[in-house]
Amino acid sequence: QVQLVESGGGSVQSGGSLRLSCAASGDTVRDSIYYMGWFRQAPGKDREGVAVITREDVTKYADSVKGRFAISRDIAKATLYLQMNDLKFDDTAIYYCATDRFAAGWSLLRPTGFTYWGQGTQVTVSS
Image (cartoon, rainbow, N blue to C red):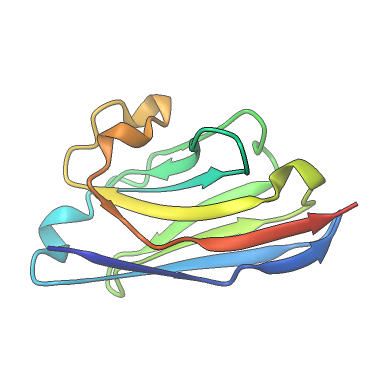
């Protein structure tokens, strides 16, 4: 089992920045966090992929966040990060981190390929 805990959400004005963190723990964490990703869900919308990073540090971003968001990880600390710059009103959502050993469809940022999920952290951007 793997537990994920997100932190770093909050309220910012348009153009501002936030850095999200996700700490992974559990007895199988080292064998499970091959793929880690950030997803988000706005009210009334489906959960969508934001960014994914592989064990080899290959990254994939949604077109809507390219050039503004950066995903990174600290393997030793089993922690995932999402640096979010130039935030826009449409970035408002609950942000979730997720991890999986295989993450089918990871390059398409599909949430369905991820097994373990955090509880989410709210990001609110005011215009």
